[in-house]
Length: 531
Image (cartoon, rainbow, N blue to C red):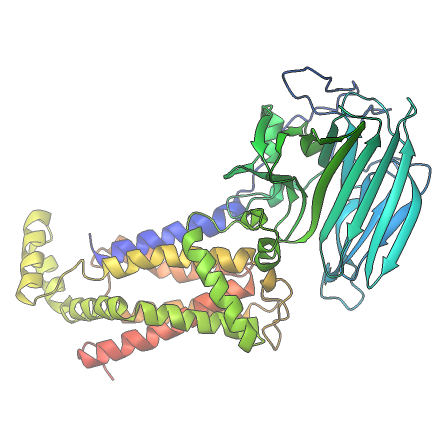
């Protein structure tokens, strides 16, 4: 195998990795089943968990149609609002958390952009968190008993009366600067009752989940991360399972709504979907306090910021998908954020991170370029061998290897440095793609968002030019077909990178420029290039 074959394989792998999800998005199921109107319940003594679903008065429309105006709107009764300096929440009269605005993140860079809505009820998309009593087909009406507001935090005491006369009390706390809602549910004289807690999403954007990133229902049970995708739930049912502690929820690229259990207790987790509505939930057995049933949980509704989620110590940071090479990506991410403490521009941090990577791989890369320089000097001799023995490929191969041996050149000398850098590149790619710190982070000039494409395509074009320069420095493949394929790679990559996040394009461009300088000076030292 020659080095150019490794480069070609790497380039084609990148095309598959980066371009497949964009060129061939996953199609949605051809047939969407309507949500069942039958009430499903869990009753004491059942061996198998069946998620509780409240009755639906009328069939839901197919996803392509707008939802009726009265569908999923606020229920009659009291609307309850509370929050802190980073999170504004809203509950309806049934105790469902139907609204969550993450106030320190905006939907776009526009001056009048609204805060990110993680929970919402709209005609096209709905996401909310609900809690129900297992085995009871009743939606109680909550009202506010007391509300204490101080130092930027809210504490609520809610109460509802059940049909059998039992009282359901709910205490909710939200500390300043926190995305964690602490909830204690108490059912007076309700010892033995169980609660469902579930994050519900209707009409999700299924195409957002692809080969590059996963979005949708997710959870951590024990040490196992569960990703039960929309398409998986459409095609088959997922058996419920029991785990100690853990969490479950639904996420997108940058934000997550998760239910976090008591890490010392066992919970029965379930996932369900029917093509329209998807639920990630748990059955909470709670604790008995005299004749009362007491349930404690936490909700995390906020950004997938690793530093913030690690403080909870429940493994919520694993919702950030760094891919197969997470063991490399995590240190790179930490180093990027460390640079950001001293350099306020994340574009500059990307360049610093790249310089560090270049220094780590300087020696093997240097050996690679020296091998390429030696092969470049031998191109006239290789062309002569091809012309003389081109009809006999076996003899031509023997003569070529003899030429390499005579000049002490290992044709595989450049392969290993490239191979060992492939995992690093893939890991860095995932860091730049998935890190919420990149969202709406400016580079300067015309680049206002490193997570979005270059609006004027300047960086992708410069990147394509840099690839052309690199090709001029590399030894030309003897195979004319292979040479033509290599000539088209800069064009293919340029077109593909037109629509990729500018942070990724910046990384590739600066990497190419530094590589060009290093390779040029190696060729100059070896007298393998005209200067």
